[in-house]
Length: 266
Image 1: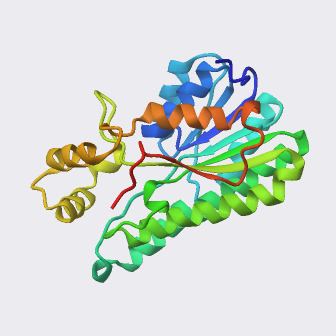
Image 2 (image 1 turned 180 degrees about the vertical axis):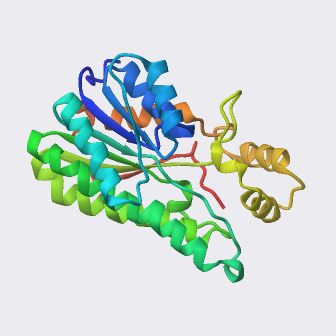
């Protein structure tokens, strides 16, 4: 299918690794003119070089307003506008409720919540001016159903749903849509790690919830009870995101879409 993305200027925040990198790769393959923004500037530059063309790499901490604005400004200068923005930056700090620290709260708010607001503020402006815009936030199944041991994370992902809904209502009349994609667990695939699962606290708490001894047993148990009998992949997320960025999805606005095979996290 031709998603009609050829030549459309796009920015992927958190685009240098994990799901964000797969989204960036799919958008580039569909012909979008791409900015890859990431705290790891070297990784962003390496991916931009692999994608070729005129892909642009920018260092960016989404919790810093000036850095987010700089990414958008450079994209507009380089490509003549901004029509697509994907906010794929997010962190997962798991903890049982009594163990949640001020740092857990502050860091999660700054990255997952404040960062998403800053991306929306900066990106929607040139989209409105151009009469076309697609803003996609990468959420989580834990933002569709709360997850025990992940109260702060779940709250931050539910937040994205309210943000996207409000932005979609505000910007919709200008031809700008805002949606959230909520994948279930994405596990390591081949040589491309699922970065979330590098956190030993997340693995420990998840195993405690499932009463299993280790990560591999956790993965097998969750896949076995999913109606699709498999896990979500980065490709599943990337292709849905690319569709939402296309003109074909113009009537999908202010929505939260689960990518979970019919199952939800516990």
